[in-house]
Image (cartoon, rainbow, N blue to C red; front, side, top):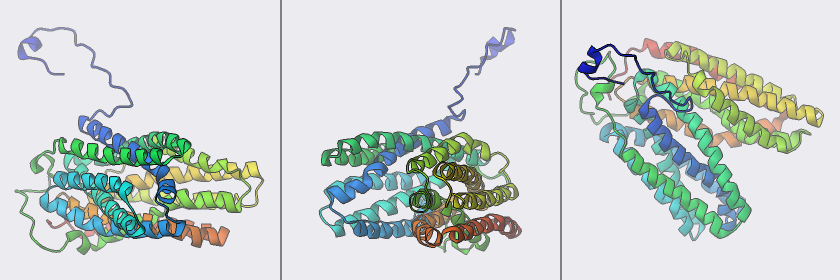
Length: 431
């Protein structure tokens, strides 16, 4: 609170500062981003909960057609991330983000007009490309609107909001599932599309400070006009290695969403309700600890150590989950939940470390390009992860879980040498 000079001249009791709810972030920019994120993820959760049934029952797609179409869409999302990030560096993050978010909304609405399989694949590819491209640009926008020392903590807070929004959206989607009608599914899809358009309008009103106000203290002089040259992130070997290692760690999401449910149902005696319980455990722990996990990741070496600890926890999670095979039903359920709890703690540590490295190793002059490449790696992991987990892991039982655990631990521990290599290369060249 500020006071006038006249008021401050006379001594008076200092009024107590207004108390802000502990659920609200103290930074007004983060609060504004949180409102945008909440709206976006409620819509996404709504669409996610009804999507498969809408595509198969309303559009008449077979499971094989749906899988092939979504795989093609995932590939488009991987490819789109890099040019989207580069475009953000050249044209500005906000206009590119607004355009891509609006395009995602229009494409989502387009699902309701699909009349055949080729049209579905075309719309799915458009939506995936716009959505993954906007994710890369959004991460670059965070670098512009948040101070360097607040970015990772801000993203952690927004990830908590994301989990809350997805839960709310999924709950609303349950209503559409219960109604089980074409009208209900169409309404859910169109509501998701409308949320994207509203989010685009909210981004349009988001104030983005000038480069000078967020400039790295180590940078001197005005930012040069971007030259038409190759993407600097694609020529940065250390950053590409960090991206690859982070992508390996991202296989944990397929492990949770695909591997654990299949393992519970096919290879253990745990009751099927355990599948839902694992998602609850993960969501609660991420909400509770994601912000706390960012503490101490301000420096690249510390962020790399967080990734190393994450890899070890994820490996332990794999081994614990594997032990549920052959155990009595109640014990198998408890063992799986313990393993998922370890996975959740590893997840929050790994995400905090990866976010910090994606910003710190990029410098301050090419966040769009670097976030585009980093996001492409994550998108690739999300695309191939289900196939890797369902065949290589579930198909080989205990040995498959052990191999996955070793892979995750190796990726986490290798982050330290990769970051030391990145720090030896010197400052990142301007884009």
